[in-house]
Length: 492
Image (tube, rainbow, N blue to C red; front, side, top):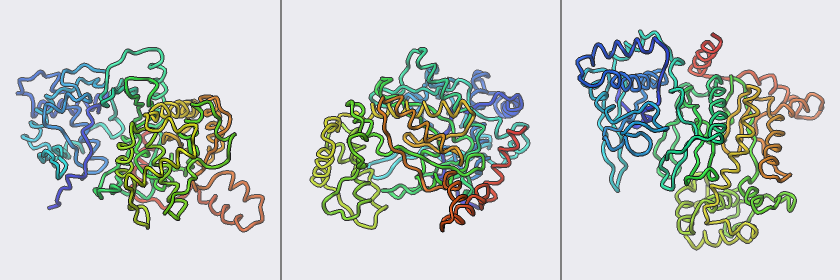
């Protein structure tokens, strides 16, 4: 008997839905067989049953070993994410805590496996209950007349989210501005939905990533249903935050992102150099790159002999400094988030050491030092979100795949020149400043191939051989099956 890994899970997606008649036929069959004697409201019961079963179906297709985490306490359904009273722009299906009764019923009739969760303590974290499709439910899934791509989200799932100072979702009035923003995100989601986004080396569509400090494993699902994007604004303000969130590519590092393929084509990633520092200068009316050519994070640190290590430390402390409200919280955040295991040297950062480093940052950038420890980072995020929106709108207009990681973008091979031009154009449009610098990842670009065609140097054969392999890759069987499934569905 195979032991279940209960940590290998994802949360229940309460927005899971399908408008295909065959899915309703399936839900009706399960309801009539196991819920018909239930005295609860039939319409509500079917709706809640549909959400749970469709999400179990998607999890089973993605990986039969994947569990779904579910809250079994009524209090969990009134925390600003799911509302027990129903009506909210963030709870379009009006999911209530009675979904707990549906889960209990599915367990009692043997349609799901169930592992009860437990509360956490100061010594260890808690865990929500876990559910998964039983053998009898899997048999029903195998005979169902709907498919993986027939399951999606409720049509009006909210894509513009406003949060308060406590990071709770809050209601807001729909305006022309919010609807225009929402329309961009909806169009972007439509583009992402029909784009095959995957990593050829991944046989299972799940990536195991060890937490940089605790060592605990977290799971990132590289799946068709892991692409839905939304924007999040903060502190009850449309001028704070606003970044695009949701895509699985935002949860992996740059090395892994370099392996992503879009519609089975290789990609190139371009990001802005030192963007938030540059935006901070722009906020003060200064065009940074007209004053110097020196990289903003190029600051030596006493006792650290490796320049790349020093740059990482300076960059992280600077960016956290824009978001922190005081030095104490800044230093705690830095120590918590710094990836100690990523370096061959053993580093230690007491407050005194970090205070000295912070002072060197302020000495390097005196014209923006007043923005550190003020929470100005959310305003800078708002600016970079407008740049991202500008770029995304243009790619959506031509139906060309693009992925955003806040201050960088991934596009298919051959689209990088267009992206480079557009990123510079967006920066000027949003900030009013004329100069910016961009950095390419190490993936092959079309310019390199074209230069190699007319060169006689040692790189010629390398780039031409690389170009011949652009459309090829050593992909796993799982990747090829996922690509064929996606291609077949969208070609039909």
